[in-house]
Image (cartoon, rainbow, N blue to C red; front, side):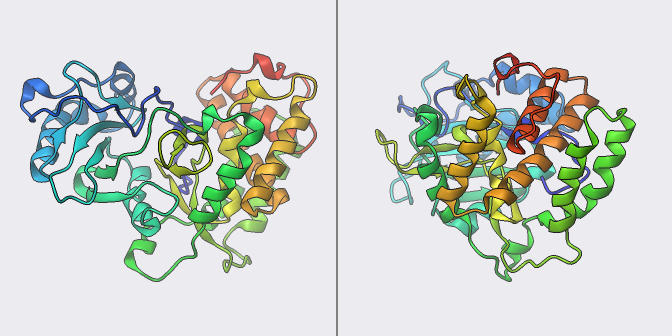
Length: 366
């Protein structure tokens, strides 16, 4: 996400997933014979065709899966005929590790190669199972990860909205570790130089698109980018940030409980912990108080920030930046409804909901 050249909306990184995510009710383990390998869900096939190199990955993914199963001595734990789980950029299959392995049950994640996925194993290695899913093995050239298996039958999405700040905040505190000097840390992209770049690219894109929203909203985003950019800022409070920490990316740490959660699918950056808030505010808008959805959104952001020990004003400011970027990207792709959702969130957290937008109930849901 820290790359200024990436024009996809942040929100498109929220891989929506079916009920089973990083968990699975075990079926019969199967050998990795070609006829036993699962099919890819149609959604991933369609998404892969829009990613550079995705068509080649679609042709080769079964061979990659078979190679990883063989090299890591894994057995599939998926009933015959049942498709694997998939988001927009990756497929995940449940596996059984050999006796004596670090964890008896795991999942094998195969990602379509793209730059944003490069630092995922580095972040998981740095967190080492604290707050985030444990990394058991990685084949970096293949974009393949072997992960501990979590309970995928539920997520923080299943917790009532106003009860989510505590669990979310606890995970943010765990994940917010200070940087070191190792090569692993060097692989994590920095937020500050990207923000500095956005001070040029955001207004230029806004102008190219015909100034599609008021100048004051653009200036609010630029103020954050300018104050938190690389020039003249202090970096002594930078931490490792999971920039895609939305409800569906938080799974119960143990089955059947809704208090302790573990993060999956990180998009790591090094910077302000407050950068993590936005995905929690652009999701579940349909559950906001119908009488005052904008007020409820701000109150929810304040509660989430307090639970995580964040600066609320800065967390809301980074939300504005991210949603302004999202809106410009959506508009550039002709996705007016999605852009309106981003503009509603960005302006509402500032207490100045833009006129002319649909009511929150009329905005596309994520």
